[in-house]
View 1: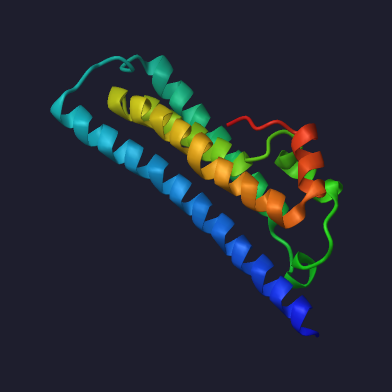
View 2 (view 1 turned 120 degrees about the horizontal axis):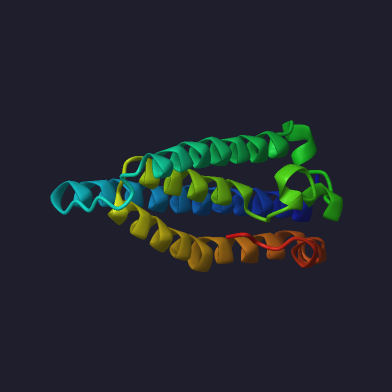
Length: 166
């Protein structure tokens, strides 16, 4: 392997690592939104989502969100030998990635919001909406930039075909 190809592989793998770091930070924002919201609800409780209907909706959202995350994760898991292969637009159009560019973020947002309804936490719901905005305008924007830089026109074509639900 020549020096240029080796540097290209190092750069691509480090960018992949950056994408995973961005994703984990985005998920952490949702986690802290729920925890901070639940803490504030202990201090200042509002019984807005106390109806059983909200709790059932919350359970359904948690199940749907976790199913969506599992589907996304199982779609992208592949042997290391295939990770470095050239990717085309069809690579991105698999599983839930046909419908949204960020299915794991969509799933985590859905699960978090469902948990907010389930635990009757107004502050959690408000903070989850804030986490959604932070995720959309900071983490996902950076992730798209990195993927655009890494895959170029292939990712741009994918972006034209599939909108971002988040």
